Length: 231
Image (tube, rainbow, N blue to C red):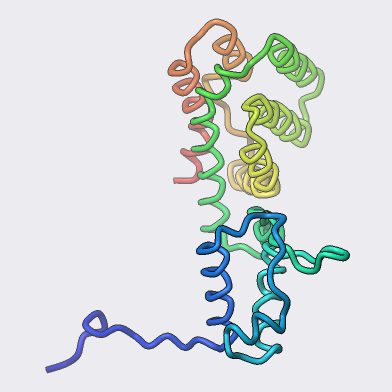
């Protein structure tokens, strides 16, 4: 009888450094090591893991690349809070990503924007609304394609800022090159920018006197031309 691939578990090929890295992570978790806490020296770790210092050094180097460990003067190595978007910054380049990946990231950004409503209504201020209105007013003075993209970025970037969530705002910033690239590709293919039945001014009016649910629906319609072009 032929053996099916899912009937037997494949053997994982792990190096000593792979295992050491996993053991170190387990050690941090089990001992509740927090950012800022010092960690044992290389020699101590090598003895505890029963491996060479070179193996420990490679494992620690990997964790440093992830931003989980840093060296402090007079303190040695300490656990640090990793930059969760650090890796994204190095690879989110339209020139090295497949077209399908670019479209999926663009869709992710649009889905994220549709879901901003609750935070926006919780944290919006009169000053925020005024700034959005200034962005809209400024956009009416020019009508070039490049300016429209900049205006789109400025308006939606302000919405992210209004959430008061630094993680969401940074993620949006990381996705900006993807947004610009996909919009440029759309215009090459279709000739004109997409037009929505819901304008930025309509979204601002809902922020002034509407509800989160109305904003979600309006944002969905506002972004629908992009969704239609991607399908």
